[in-house]
Image 1 (cartoon, helix red, strand yellow):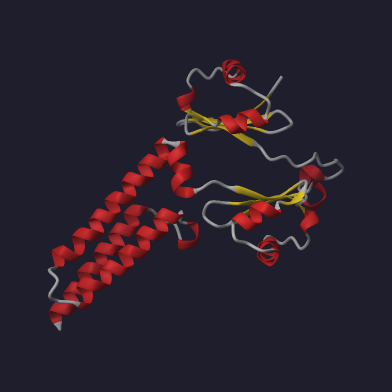
Image 2 (cartoon, rainbow, N blue to C red; image 1 turned 30 degrees about the horizontal axis):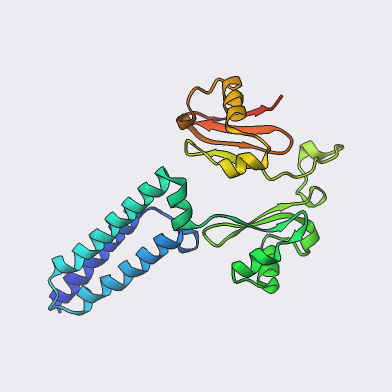
Length: 232
């Protein structure tokens, strides 16, 4: 009985340490590959707990290998936008200014009741209150309300709200996102001229650079605070 107690304690502490090393995300915030690894770890951890014939090292070793796989995949997704999209998918717009993107909804295996429920969770109760709804890669929904339904701030008093805009991320983790760039009717040369005007020498130094339809630029260099600028 004492041996079983010690085995359970060791496996529990090992899994706890490994999950802390993997990060502090909750289940609902995990990417698909992270969730799969976490579920396998949970399943494997029960085997050496219940079966004393399995050497404790043989129980811990597969867990360590899974954590290493997690670190390797995470490293690859940081370095490559293509691999990140392969492993995580990409955000999908399910409501746009045109209305509900029904084909996208079907591809996500969702129905209108699912969508309405998710909108209500964001405190919106009608589709016409939403300018954009975006299904994120972790399964959660982000909502950009229409101007008249956006929460009021002190700066809004006595002013007309500008139309809400969905910024285009044209540089992510030091890499150009060309499809986003084309949606702004820009090419790589124009982007480089813009970077020169912002005194940014190397694209790889940027964590993010986004541009909205108003020409507002949000960017942040590594180890620096974010900056706001405007296109000429």
